[in-house]
Length: 251
Image: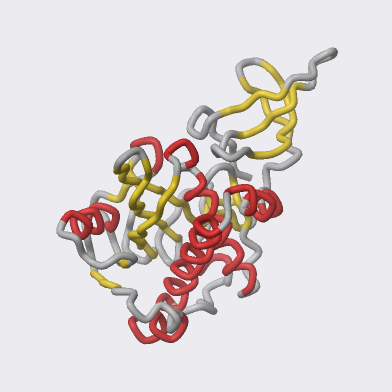
Protein backbone atom coordinates (compact mmCIF):
# COMPACT_ATOMS: atom_id res chain seq x y z
CA UNK A 1 0.00 0.00 0.00
CA UNK A 2 2.79 2.43 0.84
CA UNK A 3 4.05 2.74 -2.77
CA UNK A 4 1.05 4.44 -4.35
CA UNK A 5 0.57 6.60 -1.28
CA UNK A 6 4.14 7.82 -1.55
CA UNK A 7 3.79 8.55 -5.28
CA UNK A 8 0.59 10.55 -5.03
CA UNK A 9 1.61 12.41 -1.90
CA UNK A 10 5.21 13.06 -2.90
CA UNK A 11 4.82 16.73 -2.00
CA UNK A 12 4.05 15.74 1.59
CA UNK A 13 7.60 14.61 2.25
CA UNK A 14 7.20 14.50 6.03
CA UNK A 15 3.83 12.74 6.18
CA UNK A 16 4.10 9.60 8.36
CA UNK A 17 1.62 6.87 7.36
CA UNK A 18 0.88 3.84 9.56
CA UNK A 19 -1.05 0.90 8.08
CA UNK A 20 -2.75 -1.83 10.14
CA UNK A 21 -4.70 -4.97 9.29
CA UNK A 22 -7.08 -4.18 12.17
CA UNK A 23 -7.48 -1.49 14.82
CA UNK A 24 -10.11 -0.52 17.32
CA UNK A 25 -10.25 2.98 15.79
CA UNK A 26 -7.89 5.01 13.61
CA UNK A 27 -9.17 8.17 15.32
CA UNK A 28 -8.29 6.79 18.76
CA UNK A 29 -4.81 5.76 17.61
CA UNK A 30 -4.01 9.22 16.24
CA UNK A 31 -5.13 10.95 19.44
CA UNK A 32 -2.77 8.61 21.28
CA UNK A 33 0.00 9.73 18.93
CA UNK A 34 -0.98 13.35 19.59
CA UNK A 35 -0.69 12.84 23.35
CA UNK A 36 2.95 11.77 23.01
CA UNK A 37 3.67 14.70 20.66
CA UNK A 38 4.19 12.76 17.46
CA UNK A 39 4.74 14.64 14.22
CA UNK A 40 1.69 16.29 12.61
CA UNK A 41 0.20 15.85 10.10
CA UNK A 42 0.16 12.05 10.13
CA UNK A 43 -2.10 9.26 8.88
CA UNK A 44 -3.42 5.96 10.23
CA UNK A 45 -5.05 3.40 7.92
CA UNK A 46 -6.87 0.21 8.91
CA UNK A 47 -8.34 -2.54 6.76
CA UNK A 48 -10.87 -3.24 9.53
CA UNK A 49 -11.92 -1.57 12.79
CA UNK A 50 -13.47 -3.14 15.88
CA UNK A 51 -14.73 0.12 17.41
CA UNK A 52 -15.00 2.61 14.56
CA UNK A 53 -16.53 5.97 15.44
CA UNK A 54 -19.40 7.52 13.51
CA UNK A 55 -21.04 10.91 13.94
CA UNK A 56 -23.33 11.71 16.89
CA UNK A 57 -21.88 8.89 19.01
CA UNK A 58 -22.85 6.15 16.58
CA UNK A 59 -20.68 3.12 15.87
CA UNK A 60 -19.23 2.95 12.37
CA UNK A 61 -19.45 -0.64 11.13
CA UNK A 62 -15.96 -1.30 9.78
CA UNK A 63 -15.94 -4.75 8.21
CA UNK A 64 -12.92 -6.08 6.30
CA UNK A 65 -12.93 -4.95 2.69
CA UNK A 66 -13.55 -1.28 3.42
CA UNK A 67 -11.07 1.57 3.72
CA UNK A 68 -10.81 3.24 7.12
CA UNK A 69 -8.34 6.04 7.68
CA UNK A 70 -7.77 9.14 9.76
CA UNK A 71 -5.56 12.19 9.37
CA UNK A 72 -4.18 14.12 12.37
CA UNK A 73 -3.79 17.80 11.51
CA UNK A 74 -2.34 20.87 13.22
CA UNK A 75 -4.77 23.73 12.62
CA UNK A 76 -5.79 27.06 14.14
CA UNK A 77 -9.52 27.68 14.00
CA UNK A 78 -12.24 29.39 15.99
CA UNK A 79 -14.30 26.64 17.74
CA UNK A 80 -17.58 28.11 16.48
CA UNK A 81 -16.47 27.22 12.96
CA UNK A 82 -15.22 23.72 13.85
CA UNK A 83 -17.69 22.11 11.47
CA UNK A 84 -15.84 23.83 8.65
CA UNK A 85 -13.25 21.05 8.94
CA UNK A 86 -15.89 18.49 8.00
CA UNK A 87 -17.27 20.59 5.15
CA UNK A 88 -13.76 21.25 3.81
CA UNK A 89 -12.74 17.60 4.04
CA UNK A 90 -15.84 16.20 2.34
CA UNK A 91 -15.51 18.82 -0.42
CA UNK A 92 -11.85 17.94 -0.99
CA UNK A 93 -12.55 14.20 -1.16
CA UNK A 94 -15.42 14.65 -3.62
CA UNK A 95 -13.20 16.83 -5.81
CA UNK A 96 -10.54 14.09 -5.89
CA UNK A 97 -13.06 11.35 -6.67
CA UNK A 98 -14.70 13.34 -9.45
CA UNK A 99 -11.30 13.89 -11.07
CA UNK A 100 -11.09 10.08 -11.28
CA UNK A 101 -14.46 9.84 -13.01
CA UNK A 102 -16.42 8.83 -9.91
CA UNK A 103 -19.72 10.79 -9.83
CA UNK A 104 -19.69 11.18 -6.05
CA UNK A 105 -21.97 13.72 -4.38
CA UNK A 106 -22.46 15.03 -0.85
CA UNK A 107 -25.40 14.25 1.43
CA UNK A 108 -25.64 16.88 4.14
CA UNK A 109 -23.71 17.19 6.24
CA UNK A 110 -20.92 14.63 5.93
CA UNK A 111 -21.84 11.63 3.78
CA UNK A 112 -20.43 10.63 0.39
CA UNK A 113 -23.09 9.50 -2.09
CA UNK A 114 -22.77 7.36 -5.20
CA UNK A 115 -25.90 6.72 -7.26
CA UNK A 116 -27.94 8.07 -4.34
CA UNK A 117 -26.54 5.52 -1.88
CA UNK A 118 -23.99 5.88 0.91
CA UNK A 119 -20.42 5.31 -0.24
CA UNK A 120 -18.78 6.65 2.91
CA UNK A 121 -18.78 9.16 5.71
CA UNK A 122 -16.59 11.53 7.68
CA UNK A 123 -16.16 12.17 11.39
CA UNK A 124 -14.09 15.10 12.63
CA UNK A 125 -12.80 15.49 16.20
CA UNK A 126 -10.90 18.48 17.61
CA UNK A 127 -8.74 19.60 20.52
CA UNK A 128 -9.08 23.14 21.89
CA UNK A 129 -6.17 25.01 23.48
CA UNK A 130 -6.37 28.58 24.81
CA UNK A 131 -9.74 29.12 23.19
CA UNK A 132 -8.70 27.94 19.72
CA UNK A 133 -8.80 24.60 17.94
CA UNK A 134 -5.17 23.48 17.87
CA UNK A 135 -5.46 19.99 16.36
CA UNK A 136 -8.03 17.87 14.55
CA UNK A 137 -8.50 14.27 13.48
CA UNK A 138 -10.51 13.72 10.31
CA UNK A 139 -11.72 10.13 10.09
CA UNK A 140 -13.11 8.64 6.86
CA UNK A 141 -14.73 5.33 6.00
CA UNK A 142 -15.17 4.28 2.36
CA UNK A 143 -17.11 1.24 1.16
CA UNK A 144 -14.71 -0.59 -1.15
CA UNK A 145 -15.41 -4.34 -1.15
CA UNK A 146 -17.12 -4.66 2.24
CA UNK A 147 -20.76 -5.74 2.72
CA UNK A 148 -23.21 -2.81 2.72
CA UNK A 149 -26.89 -2.37 3.68
CA UNK A 150 -29.59 -1.61 1.06
CA UNK A 151 -28.99 2.13 1.54
CA UNK A 152 -25.26 1.70 0.87
CA UNK A 153 -23.04 0.99 -2.12
CA UNK A 154 -19.43 -0.11 -2.44
CA UNK A 155 -17.04 0.56 -5.29
CA UNK A 156 -16.98 -3.10 -6.31
CA UNK A 157 -20.75 -2.93 -6.90
CA UNK A 158 -20.50 0.37 -8.76
CA UNK A 159 -17.85 -1.03 -11.08
CA UNK A 160 -19.76 -4.30 -11.43
CA UNK A 161 -17.02 -6.44 -9.95
CA UNK A 162 -14.04 -4.67 -11.54
CA UNK A 163 -12.02 -2.59 -9.06
CA UNK A 164 -10.72 0.22 -11.28
CA UNK A 165 -8.89 1.97 -8.44
CA UNK A 166 -6.65 -0.10 -6.18
CA UNK A 167 -6.95 0.24 -2.43
CA UNK A 168 -3.68 2.10 -1.97
CA UNK A 169 -4.58 4.66 -4.62
CA UNK A 170 -8.04 5.06 -3.08
CA UNK A 171 -6.39 5.83 0.26
CA UNK A 172 -4.07 8.33 -1.40
CA UNK A 173 -7.02 10.10 -3.04
CA UNK A 174 -8.86 10.39 0.27
CA UNK A 175 -5.79 11.71 2.08
CA UNK A 176 -5.06 14.19 -0.70
CA UNK A 177 -8.67 15.37 -0.59
CA UNK A 178 -8.55 15.97 3.16
CA UNK A 179 -5.26 17.86 2.87
CA UNK A 180 -6.53 19.94 -0.05
CA UNK A 181 -9.73 20.90 1.75
CA UNK A 182 -8.24 21.66 5.14
CA UNK A 183 -5.34 23.64 3.66
CA UNK A 184 -7.78 25.79 1.72
CA UNK A 185 -9.76 26.32 4.93
CA UNK A 186 -6.63 27.22 6.91
CA UNK A 187 -5.29 29.62 4.28
CA UNK A 188 -8.58 31.37 3.49
CA UNK A 189 -11.94 30.80 5.17
CA UNK A 190 -15.02 28.61 5.15
CA UNK A 191 -16.69 31.13 2.81
CA UNK A 192 -14.29 29.98 0.09
CA UNK A 193 -15.19 26.32 0.71
CA UNK A 194 -18.98 26.63 0.75
CA UNK A 195 -19.54 27.31 -2.99
CA UNK A 196 -17.70 24.10 -3.89
CA UNK A 197 -19.50 22.16 -1.15
CA UNK A 198 -22.89 23.39 -2.38
CA UNK A 199 -22.00 22.54 -5.99
CA UNK A 200 -21.73 18.88 -4.96
CA UNK A 201 -24.62 18.88 -2.45
CA UNK A 202 -27.30 16.51 -3.74
CA UNK A 203 -29.88 17.86 -1.27
CA UNK A 204 -29.84 21.41 -2.63
CA UNK A 205 -33.36 22.35 -3.77
CA UNK A 206 -35.01 19.32 -2.15
CA UNK A 207 -38.25 19.70 -0.20
CA UNK A 208 -38.16 18.41 3.39
CA UNK A 209 -40.37 18.47 6.48
CA UNK A 210 -38.89 19.74 9.73
CA UNK A 211 -40.94 19.98 12.93
CA UNK A 212 -44.16 19.70 10.89
CA UNK A 213 -43.11 22.56 8.59
CA UNK A 214 -42.35 22.03 4.92
CA UNK A 215 -39.49 23.85 3.28
CA UNK A 216 -36.91 23.85 0.50
CA UNK A 217 -33.18 23.38 1.16
CA UNK A 218 -31.44 26.54 -0.03
CA UNK A 219 -27.91 26.14 1.33
CA UNK A 220 -25.52 25.51 4.21
CA UNK A 221 -23.88 28.18 6.37
CA UNK A 222 -20.44 28.59 8.01
CA UNK A 223 -21.45 26.45 11.00
CA UNK A 224 -22.64 23.58 8.82
CA UNK A 225 -26.29 24.40 9.50
CA UNK A 226 -28.79 23.44 6.82
CA UNK A 227 -30.71 26.45 5.50
CA UNK A 228 -34.37 25.73 4.75
CA UNK A 229 -36.85 28.25 3.35
CA UNK A 230 -40.35 27.55 4.66
CA UNK A 231 -42.96 27.16 1.93
CA UNK A 232 -46.23 27.56 3.86
CA UNK A 233 -48.50 30.35 2.54
CA UNK A 234 -47.19 33.67 3.84
CA UNK A 235 -44.01 32.14 5.27
CA UNK A 236 -40.77 33.92 4.45
CA UNK A 237 -38.34 32.81 7.15
CA UNK A 238 -35.21 30.71 6.75
CA UNK A 239 -34.80 27.92 9.31
CA UNK A 240 -31.26 26.93 10.38
CA UNK A 241 -30.97 23.24 11.25
CA UNK A 242 -27.77 22.18 13.09
CA UNK A 243 -25.98 18.99 12.00
CA UNK A 244 -27.45 15.98 13.78
CA UNK A 245 -30.94 17.45 14.20
CA UNK A 246 -32.40 15.63 11.20
CA UNK A 247 -31.30 12.88 8.86
CA UNK A 248 -31.88 13.23 5.14
CA UNK A 249 -32.70 9.96 3.41
CA UNK A 250 -31.06 7.90 0.69
CA UNK A 251 -32.53 6.78 -2.60
